[in-house]
Amino acid sequence: TGIRGAFRSHRFAPRFESMLTQILEQVLNGLLAGAYYLLIALGLSLIFSLGGLVNLAHGAFYALGAYFAVIVAEHLGLGFAGSAIASPIVVAVIGLVIERFLFRRFYREDPALGLLLTFGLAMVAEQSLRWVFGAAPVPFSIPTALRGQVFIGDFIYSKYRLLMLAVAVAAVAGLWVL
Image (cartoon, rainbow, N blue to C red; front, side, top):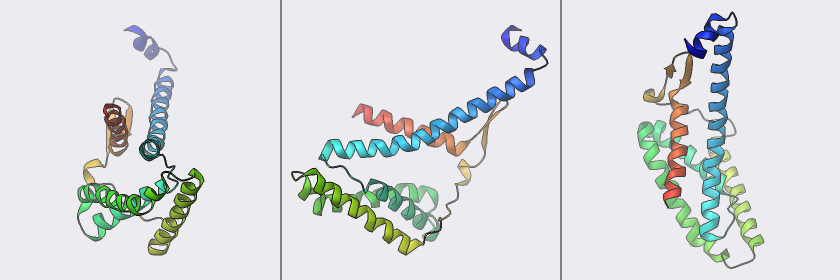
């Protein structure tokens, strides 16, 4: 009955429904990729608005947090929950130390000096991480609670990816409230 019934009676209905499912999946994949960029951009804009310093080492802090999460979860045995709690705290403490001893000196200086400082800091952090962990990617397994898919009719999507979309929405909502 209705539009759906009309399409089902047509000989192309299965292909049409499959195409709609694929389009929805690709839209969600695009939103997820955009959500990753959104989280990074939110951090950059928050730092710039509070300190007036463009932090080119921002990505290095994300990488540091990711590598620390691997250490906490797999080498210290605290799992995903432990790494999700400890990693941001450790990176925040490192960020506070760097802000206190490096960034504060450049808030009222020429912005080019701050750019040079953060660019150099990014290079040092990147090469330090490469020296410690190597150039090959470090595997990190998804926790068992987030493995698997969500089934909505013919539509299938990863639980982990849905959580990442929810985290991005929560981060935007949290900053909106601030």
